[in-house]
Image (cartoon, rainbow over the protein chains, first blue to last red):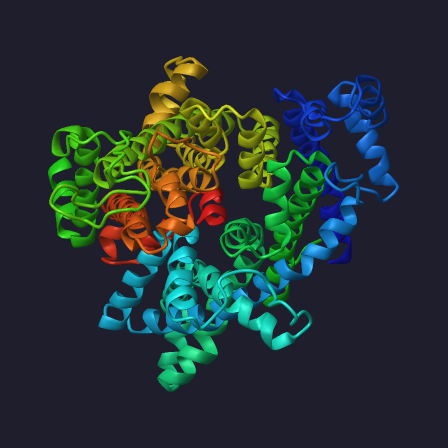
Length: 318
Length: 302
């Protein structure tokens, strides 16, 4: 297993190389180009000073040369310095990461806690009103744009009912107060969970139906076991296997959803930092976030494979 | 056979509902200017500054600039369908050709081609889209369509390759090969047409996914630019503080997106039920499941 993980991680290196290279090329080749930002943000500079800045940032070189500089500093553990405030990109990302992680973990927990029982119940009472209604809700949730749902929930629960704050992660003077932080996270977490509910519930229902028609369930019934034991001991345990792998595969998607959530709720997380730096053409920060997102995808895929082997003893990686 | 497929389709009530919604949206997009003669971009200076509630003159009210919301909704439908359908066509053409070639070639070439697909699927695609959009600063509809299309063909390629792999060993393909058909003819005339069944389902669902991505981009200000109306930028307009006590400005574009996406996913589901042979043995079986897992983009934008 360890050998497998090491091999997969090694295999991911060319992939990360490719992702960063393409992103760099896109930025280098885009009209405007990185050098032009100094035109807007440093209008007071004399031409000589401007040229000096551009040269010192290496922006006068072609993009592929800059890419190798970037790779070189990456090997030394540095993601470069932000064009906006000249702080290390690593620091900027690390200070934003906790908010995003809290958002994602809480929302994943909430989604699983709701979607799995409903999926199982829908599968075991197939064709009943419960099945139909939960399917209809899943379809509706699937069709709902996450940003619109966020706006609607803010409008109802924050602006009209005033139960929760409209945006941000802390009230003035309450920084570090856990309860206050949780209160700020309620609406974002619920929004993200409602939208991801659909896929989880439908997936769990599908794998549960498949497990219920499997021969070993028929055997269990034939042995005269009670329906409860058949469903929960035999069918459910097997039906959870595909669901567990979904855990790894949805990781990158959740991060994508976080961009919108953080944008709508002004949550100071990684997604908002990404959008802000794209708008302010802060290339080093954009590159840092691209790299981190690609790493998350790789980890997610690996996690799916590893979990698969952990929950299903029939699967062995050589 | 077509008749029995049609009958099976009409028996699925949800599929018929999906079809009805899609037809309605298409009609609104095409006939919009006839149904509501107001211009979607003309600013009514008398109404500018504060949105007016729905009334007989303006069935869905007016927005902050005094523009007729219904006319903008129709114009938005046109943009959404254009992006959804053309980006889908790009993805289907690229994905089908790529997948069919990989599957037909087999061996080394196949495994290299599919490794490339795996790599592309690991791209943080939504972030890439917003980066490209923000950096090029050319928000032409063509560019938006190209980006969405070129970043979503990979799942189609996987699907078609799988079909082709199983078709390759079938007798009719063997017969064509024995008759001396060239590889190109084999792929284009024999393999692709027979592998298209699941592609129809994927294509229908992809339209909805693309519409969602376009709305998301326009909402962030990186898609369709004002004054051209799109459901995404209408929603962005509704976020300004002055529009806060005009709930219809938030509800209209949002509900339009929800209804349209619902239509395409119900329709895709319906096609799946009709086209999937295995479903015949098991009515209401779980072939409907893939509806929720199609494009890697959806998950991110959705």
